[in-house]
Length: 103
Ligand SMILES: [Zn+2]
Image (cartoon, rainbow, N blue to C red; front, top):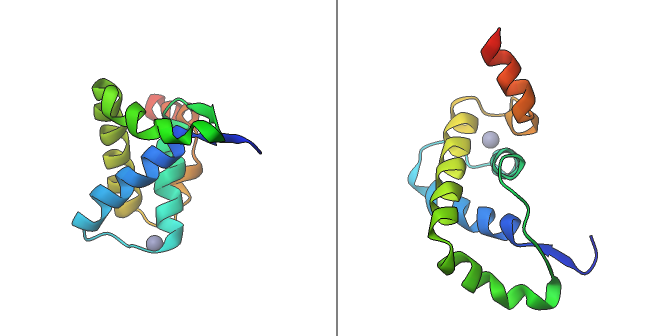
């Protein structure tokens, strides 16, 4: 949306760049987007007006609990997509996931 920035999106992408290079999984752009989509579907959006983008650093360093949660979700996403690349895993909603667990 114009004028708005999702801080969570930027944080997740940065986290992927930190964790992903240490794995042996497929590193194509589709996998990167799948990982980002998977993680972002499971984390709350954090919208700010773009000119507040400089707040990003503060957001990241001041919310340790959030950082731990983001790291855990991104790491799970990297593993899931890495084990089953190019399967549109990132587009599955958490509801569908819970359904498949029940069955
Ligand atoms: Zn790939």
